Length: 346
Image (cartoon, rainbow, N blue to C red; front, top):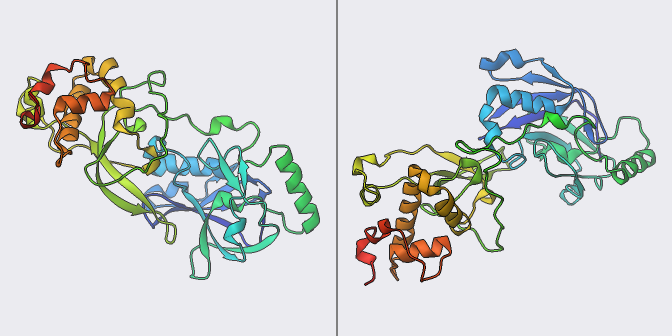
């Protein structure tokens, strides 16, 4: 727990090191962020300044909805957007030491730091070089000023024992919106989460993966970028849909002019990547027949996958069976007989 001896300023960071907005939490007690005021916002959104919310989570959602409505397509809670610049003794080993049911924006899980017992910290409205940025939720629980240490420790233990170490009020479940299904899908048709394998995920440019929130098309990594506030940067992956080349379009009976030259880009986290083989077969056999764009994208992915075996070339048919997890005896679609013709086996 921490004892904040200054006003509790919370800064929102999205995409880069420039603050998106600054909030002031007027009352924070133990695991709850209470009434919160927006005190700084971009000039184009000046109507937000001095707007009051009943709690911090609501303030963050309100600000993001107004300034960055695309936040609803993110995987919430990773990365964090709410940060506090703290000065004082706050050992890293005492942070994130107790699981909580929910946290700011993530809707699933978070952590609190009860081992930071009665640490006194100061908060700066802006960084001055004397402290460090800490995710806001890790500063919980907050001990109200004037409460004896032994009383505060017992109160925290009681709250954790009752499962009340979370950041939202008892009846505020509706404050966190449901995820918006990707374009072209519904909540009922979104594929179930793929099982994560305990193998290293590579993030080199050109590698292809599926990302559920971006829809059914496979995506390729275009580049990597660093985001986040100073001292807490993290890597994001710039990806775009795998679009068919002229050769793939012709193999599907179309024109090479059907190929899209520039596809829209999206930024994702590494933990959102899903291996091609985890989704390919399901999408090909269940959806690609009636979705021309999806079928073309999957065909292009097969062609690129086959071509990636430079030292030991494989045919497009072999690549298809590998991605779809089919046996060697499984017949392959006709279009693959003309893809990568130089690698075809007899």
